Each structure stands twice: as structure tokens, then as C-alpha cells.
Amino acid sequence: MRDSQTDRFAVAIFLLVAGYALIAGLLVQEVVVPTLVGEEGENGLLPILDTATFHEIAVEMSVEMESRGWAAWEWNPGWSANQPVGIMAAVYYWFGPDPIYLLPVNAVFHGLSAVVLFYLFLAIGAPIKASFAGILPFVFFPSTLTWVSQFHKDGLYCLGLFTMFLGCVKILSARSWSARIIGVFCLVVGGFAAGLMRGYGVTVFMVAVLGCGSFLVFATLLSKKRRVSREMLNYVVFIVGLILVSPFSGSKGGNISSGDSEPKEISAVVETAGDPTKARSQEAEKKEKEVGDGWVPPVTPWESSSWLPGPIDRNIHRLIHNRTVFFWLFPESGSLVDADKVFSGAGDVIAYVPRALAIGLFAPFPNMWFEEALTRTGGLQRKVSAVETFSAYLLLAGCIYGLFRWPNREKCFVVLAAVLLVVALVYPVPSVGSLYRLRFGAFSLLLGIGAVSLYQAFLTKRFRGC
Image 1 (tube, helix red, strand yellow):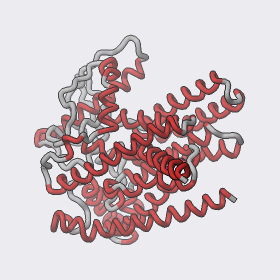
Image 2: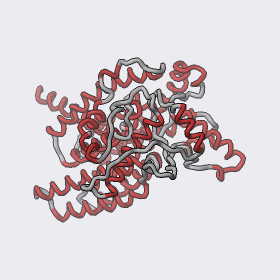
Image 3: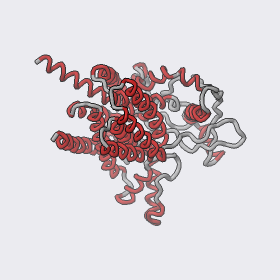
Image 4: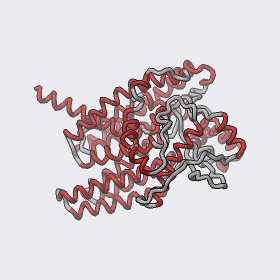
């Protein structure tokens, strides 16, 4: 009976959230954007976002499809390692080259993400109404309009990320084979969806959940509070699930520039949507034209660490090299943080963790909220981020409170893994404007748990008052 009630609640959530996404998208495209940017936004798209470039490529592809049919369609036509151009071109081919036809797709992604998030909070022990409270930051924070009213990677990526988290929680807490199978299914489907948009995000996710899951499982075994056979079986299924997800993983930034005579081609462009100063420098554009399709970033000096296995050290080097690429592409970004910080080895990366944690969880800092923006829309973004960040501080406090007030292993797993995902982004993305959007999927898990905890605290206090 409870499952039936929960499923009806989930359907209602989908309809509510999808309806909101459609209405908000229409208002932004038809009213807000034209008002803000005038003729530049006549198609409803903000020119400072990557969506505008995606749109141009998708229109070209849809025109080509008119003459050649589906033979001209590509999921990824280049320019960036992962992008939603294939989806956009298919919609344009069927309905016409207008971004307004993408809004139903956004609505479905946003609605399904809210439903999966709802089930995830239920899986970590939250009551139904508290779980509903937990989805509200993700659904209604204004910054989500970047992909709800426009069209970007985050809609499908967040859906995949939440589904992978749900799969992990299902597996690690499973008491039956049906629960394990459902968990593996969620993990694989989520990995596929997230990998379509951000293969490197799936890679980081796998590393984060493997570390957190292993720690919590073996800590549980040492405490002898659960059956050893069931815990080990769940852990084996968990590992198998991650192996099945691995084909959807990827890297970002191309090869590590090491000063070799052969040029190292950059195969993926660093994402920067959400940062109003994302335009590349004239020098970078000149280099790109000189070299052609493959263009060479500066060298990232690195001292190998004897205490780390070679593959791990090289992947840390790759992470920091992406930081070098970011500075090379966007030297005039208006929200750079710690631009003078140099990482010469794995030891520097580890020592920076406390600072990365502060930036990942608390940026943009209050001193950034009211700084003068470089563009008109950038000023609006700063005002929105100020309200959201202040709200985030309250919700993060609620998250910490909930961990101590209503602790359980599944909740700890989600929080620890989400924090690792956020911190991992700080190193290659030293711009708060870009980081703000890229972290939102994992960040909204923390905010959601905070909302769940504050709602539970409110109910507890109210009942005690009665």
C-alpha cells in the first residue's frame, strides 16, 4: 500500500516539475531573454551560453538532414567531446529549427530527475514528504534555468548522475536479488545517460563511489552489525555494476602536454557556460587557426611522485593539466580563483584539498556577490547566485545537522561521494562562474539532504510543541 502511495506521489512530482519547466522555459525564451539582450536573443537563447553555439551547429545539421536524411545525423559532430547537438538536430529536423521545440525535452529530463531524486532520498531513509522537500532546491533554484529554459548538457547529465547514485544505494543496502538487479540496472542506465554528456563525469563518479562504498562496507564489517555474507555479496555486485558502467566513462582535455616535439591535440573543450566572460583570448584563437583542428596548450610541469602508482600520478597530472588548458583558453574570465596557485606534484594537489573543499562548497563567496559584472546578464547572474548561495549555506548546515541527528550508512555514502565530486571539479575549473553550473548535480544532493533534514527537524519540533 505504501509503495502504491509513493508511486502516485512520484507521478504527481513528475507532472508538477515538468509543467513548471515548460512554463518557465516559455517565459524565459519569449519574454526574459528578448528583454535582456534584445535582437541577439530573438531565438530565445542567451548568446553568452554554449547553447547558442550548439544551436548553430544543430541547425546546420538539420538542414543537411533535409537533403541527405538521417545519414547526415551525428550524435557528436565535433567541436566538443560531449554535447547535446545530436538531440537538438533531431528535434529541429522533425519540428523545425526553433529552440522552443526543445522545451518539452527539457521538461521530461527535469521531471524525471526530480522523480529519481525523490526515490533516492526515500532510499536513504527519508519520509515521503521530507523527500519531496529534498527535491525543491534542484527543481526551483533559478540557476537551473540555464538548462531548463535553454538547452545544455546538465539536464541529461543530472538525470544520469542521480540514477547512478540511486543504483549504488539500492545495491549497497539490498536484502534481495530483485533489489540488486534494480540497482545494477539504475547504475548502468544512469551511466549511459551521464556518459552521453560528460564521460569524464562518469569516471570521477566511479572513483568517488568506489572509494566511499569500499570504506563504508568494510567499516560496517568491522563493526559486525550486519551479516557478513550479505555485505560481501552486495559489495561484489556493486563492483560488477561499476565495471558495467566503465564503457561510458571518459577523460577530458586530451593528452597531457609534456613539452614533446609532437603536438598534443586537445580533444575536448573545457565547459564554460554560465561564465559571462567565457570568450577565448585573441591569442588562443590565433593559435587555433595556426595549428588547425588540433591546437596545442602550454606545458604543465610535473614531478612524478615515487609513493604513488604511475597510472594514478598520471591521472592527477591530467587533472591539473586541464587547469592549465582553462587558463590558456580563458585568461580574462571575471571569476577566476587562486589563479596564482601552482601544482607541481601530487603532494601539492593533496595539500590543496581543504581550500578546494571551501571553494567547491561555499563559492561564490560573499565578497563576489556584489562585484561589478562584465556584462548585463552577468550582473543578473551574480544577484541570482547571491540568493542561491545564501540559501545553500543554510541547507548545507541542515545537511551536517541531519548527518548527526539521523545518521545512516546510505546517507553518509551519498554525502561523501557528492563532496568528492564537487571537490574534484575545483582543480580543473578555477572559475567560479563555470564551477557554479558544473557542480550543481552533485551539489544539489547535499542541498537536498539539507532540505530533508530541516523539514524533519521542523516536524520534530512541532510535534514536541504539541
